[in-house]
Length: 302
Image 1 (cartoon, rainbow, N blue to C red):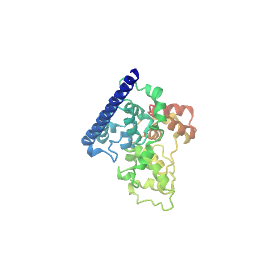
Image 2: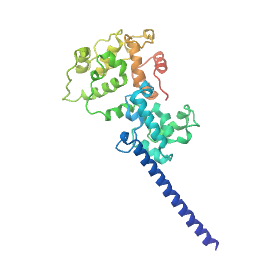
Image 3: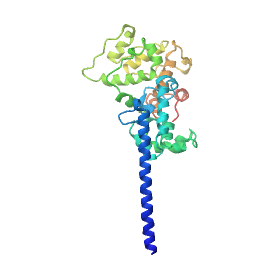
């Protein structure tokens, strides 16, 4: 008799678990359908709102673009979409894996997406201590990942003079985009059929750099123009290799900034993680004083 009761109880529990599983799956399906109805105009082919690091890879983590305009709007929609998503680990992991890995400095957002139950309990400083390894092992974050994410979205080349009139304006206002474009063009320049389009007269100073991959003699007083010429050639030379010192840094964001300040502007846009930055510093034999300066001015979390 006890055996029969045990078997009956086991079968009963199995049925209950089956009903709960069906109810849970039905709830998840309903949630996802509600999301699709709410965000239908913004959903990608997979029925998702793409994470911000995929939608705008040319926006660095701390750009003002996330607090105004299209970036702010998308970030708000994405947060709402994630908030409506079922909290199941498997569902959220599957969502994140349907999209490119995030740069390291988005790790806090990835952690909160994957573990919504921990959002209120963990400080940002705990991301690297507790969850960074998990996110790395799951393939959800990666070093220098924004550029390949951006490149995969490109259909041909969008030339920088299509965004702003002068090289200086592009270097100042579209720094990260200019860096990504520089890397893209460097790859295209290797193709036998590479041809430079007609360069507007105001961009004539950058034409030789684009055509021959030679930036020419740097003008340390015209920092933004020099930066654009170097990026046009994809041959950016750091200040310490040009004989400049920390005394040449004026901490300026003005249009007439010198080269060290323009280099700072580039570095703030180029690096999303310490690993990528340290590789650049090592490859260019940066003196310790410059490494300390870079760690202070190039903002990143991890």
